[in-house]
Amino acid sequence: MKRKPRSFETQEMRDLAEVIRNRRTVDLYLHTEVPDELIEEALELAVWAPNHHVTEPWHFYLLGDETIEGCLDLVRDIVTENKGAEKGEFKRKKWSEKPGWLVVTCKRSDDPIREQEDYGACAAAIQNFSLYLWEAGVGTKWTSGAITRDQRFYDLLGIDSREEFVVGMLWYGYPKITPTQSRAPLADKTTRLP
Image (cartoon, rainbow, N blue to C red; front, side, top):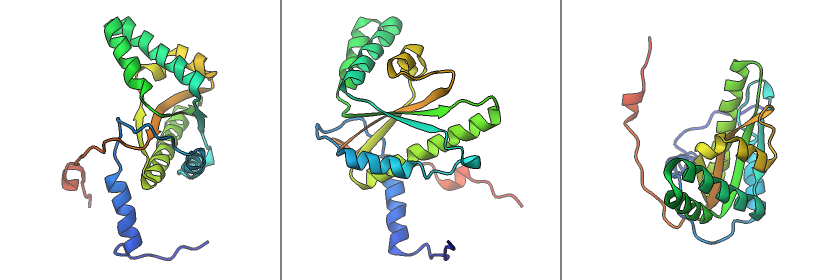
């Protein structure tokens, strides 16, 4: 299929730019359930992320209530071990307010370059997932904190850490508050070479 060049000044291009520019990491959610069909459609689009040699290195774990409870107990334990019981309970309560939970993993590779490329592909898949949901009015937060590197987390989810590693845990739901944000000027982050 041959694609025709498009003007970047069309309404469709401006709409896409707004979706990308306005997407935010959301930490506070309404207690409104996100339809499973919407999540499945977002995952279907996530896998269209670019991936070198079409390795499709990702795997998605949609967490149910029982597994989420295990995660809440585990994060409480991890924080308690490092910062004390009060902070552990605070973290458990804060996390218990997240409505939707998804864990994204990446296949391990003996080739460090392949594993790096595959990690990048998984990150692109997460962006596809997040942008699609954002357009549907659903916010996400990608976390890669201590729990995602703890073997107890792998055991809880039934993930073989010799075969795959956690790229991130994503929470999703309808935003209670949409934060504001800005970026540094592009000129500060761009170098044109001759």
